[in-house]
View 1 (cartoon, rainbow, N blue to C red):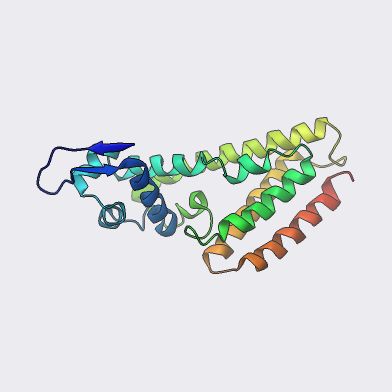
View 2: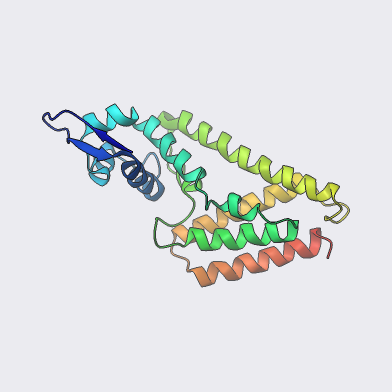
Length: 206
């Protein structure tokens, strides 16, 4: 979709709003919300501040539009992994998928949602809380999937879906952090494989 503006000082005649949003996402992904300035955003998006405000609202509104774009991608981690029927394949898909996506050089390293609030201060507390609520929804999706597996007899007796979901969330955070610090795909694939096999051995019926 392209927005066309009447010519005026500091405002381009038109720009691709979808491409601009992708560029904004990459800046937030790399720097986090607090570490991203409006100047960095407008430079990356190729627009002036009046155009940013007109198309997206303020920085906070732009941030959540960018995160919506990230979460709703067809190739998002959960969308791909949850296509598997067996819970063992879901777990492998999530962990190995995280290793691959978090180290993908076509975009900033790590998870955009996890990275976004690392440096938030008190002034950005509302941003942090909203992001935490989104993370909580993702964790609940894991709980729901593991409860389904439990009801279908795929999990070992004593396996607690909530605890398993918390473990997966902790692993995502660790993989994201390591990817952001420069860990390679090969390194994280080995970590993800070891973690997946450990989880399956203890919690999933063979």
